[in-house]
Amino acid sequence: MNRRRQLIRRAAALLTAFIMVFTAAGLTYAEGVYAAGGTTGKKATKKVHLLMVDNSFDGWRLARCFRKVGVKVTTVYSYKKIKPKKYDGLILPGGTDIDPALFHQKRNVMTFGVNRKKDKLQITAVKRFAKAGKPILGICRGCQVINVALGGSLNQHISRHTGFRTVRNVEGYWMYNLYGATESTYHSHHQVVSELGKNLVATSYDNGSGHIESIQHKSLPIYGIQWHPDMRMGKRGKKVFKAFKKICKENRDKAAAEAAAAKAQQEAAAAAAQAQAAQNAQAAPAAS
Image 1 (cartoon, rainbow, N blue to C red):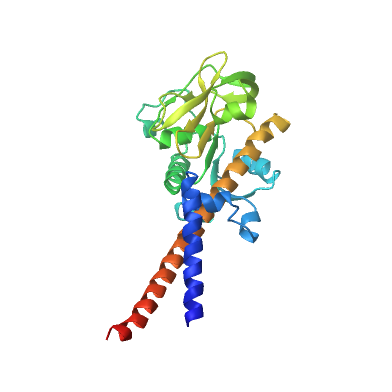
Image 2: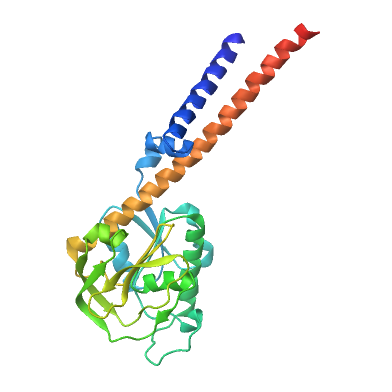
């Protein structure tokens, strides 16, 4: 019995020392576990698994691009199947225009192909994944869906952007880190982000028209790209898919580390309580 109590006390002492070391380094316990490589084994090496809420050819094309970089993609088209816990991230492809009523505008004569069911499904998906802290990537229409879901608006019609155009990336954000100050990107759209949604920032602009060409959330892993890395961009476009895959994996591993840390803290607290109870029980007869 004494040997068991000694082992419990040693385990509690080691955990306390571990916490103190990482606290001194300015990290939380969970960050310490993550930094120390606390997520190992089969779960840490499984494929990144993304959800796509779509039923179009644009969705098929984007899913194919992600599968080529080793990502599993599941496509759904119903509210009950939008379950962030089952996936590492959400992707939204290009497509037709969003119902302008969803951003409090009257319909422009140039707005076409509106599918309100799809709009609401994808907006619901963005809100659920954002609430869960899971990464989101929207391409073209998908970028616009993110903006509308977070309370922003769109310019319903501009002089159509087609073919390769140069974008200027804002330093300090995802697009700049991937491509540097400028990049020639492939475009096929006639609508763009107008008023930004809550906590979104513009991270690149069209070098000719000045319109917003990519967005990013200030604190959550949410990214929108107005141009098409999934069309005619080859290895340069593939950078986006590989980078988002990495973001999803890191987000998943960190969440797993935090869960492991919380479990370890609970177990240590229980062990300490058990040791204290045993010590009190042993001291009680002596006191009487």
